[in-house]
Image 1: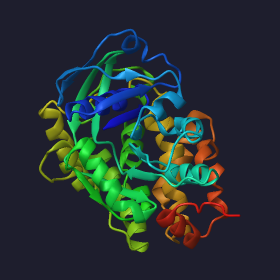
Image 2: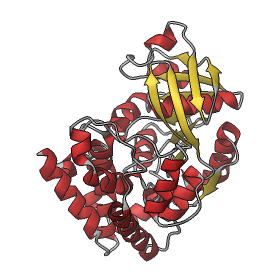
Image 3: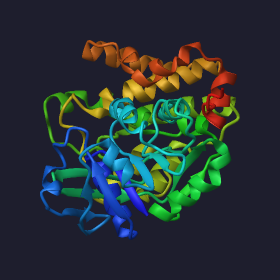
Image 4: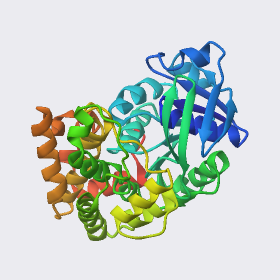
Length: 361
């Protein structure tokens, strides 16, 4: 298949390597064009770690060219860039194409559904609860792939296309996907925001001072207990809504291939195996600037709709807003555009199942 990837960071590069490894043809588009200059100039993409090899993705000059060259599109950039790129690709997407969010955040799938419905288009939109790969970009043409996940939870909008969405994901990236059947479940399946909240709070001075530090090693017992309590809040909201989502223990086990234990001990084992990752060396990190407004804020909103407030998540939003001197609640342009605050729980459930209806007449 022809795969168009929006983004040119570590996840985009690692996803491109995984797709090419599975014999698909990949085109990358970077909205700024900066990170694809080397590839556009003929240099190869080199992957090391969990995926090893030399790959040759093409580079699109703009969103229209990317969409025209793709059977399936993958959104693989931080959530604070999603609205801009969705606005760019939506005028060109057809009903025959599949759009995959790697990973989904703040009901971006619904925002895209609304943009397409206004054009009379119903595409297959697949939301992933996490990325299929994790890694770090070491240069404009080199990516270190930390892990290829054993399982990724997904849901498709509209739900009537779930079989097609699951089939395409497996064809592109292997048999590693579990259909959770509900976009609402996927909205509560991304553990990065809660995990990054605890990690960043526990290591903020390391981030600010630009230190080099092991992330896994510094998920100490106190930090680990915070992550576990944050997870209990998220699971409680999902349970209240009748949804099944993976817990934090399953996440670390399936993502990083370590035995189930306390979260701190699982991270220590990852560190000892050389798979603990390196923590952010700047306070200007997506652990905060992406995950607070597009992750914690969304979970908190769903909790309030469900009548089960996520008190630790809410506290984290306020603490980070105080630390950074910004109102992170106001920075989520997707939820603002969708006017989520004016929706009832039932309206949101309906949209998560069917997407936006194409206007008639």
